[in-house]
Length: 200
Image (cartoon, rainbow, N blue to C red):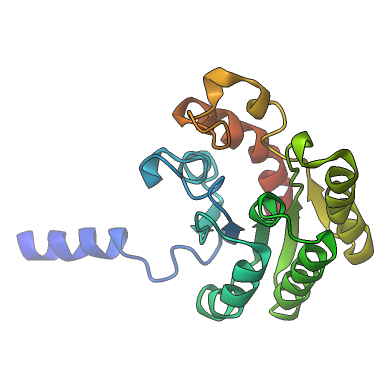
């Protein structure tokens, strides 16, 4: 009797198709999405997962990642995870390194095309660089994202750091990365966009 009960419990807990009815979203980002400076469980991706029972979030973000680095990793990630959606949050490190906006735009465009070719839909996050990099450069960089969203007919998600970056209480000492207190706010900001995506 005990053995039979244990077998039933194991069957209930382990369902091979447990994720089958849930949309999978691959997060392709940099340190802003990779829980930089804290444990992964404290980052916005894990916090958002707790409030999105209808989705499986796969965090493939890497601190320091550039658009080129993300593009190189993407084919393997798409083949391995076969996501329904790809959330692209890249470009910040390109800007910090002074890469030409045309290079960043080309890399992001290829990432969008690869994702679509693999059968995934795309959410593109806006990314902005600090104004001290020069007004002309900042404006050129900012235009990358709406241009790509329009050209490829994909959803453009506003940059989740816009208000957080101006609040010292939500930033780490380096002035670049969000701290632990900011993670819940980022998750709450992104939740409607992810809910809309998985509801389509």
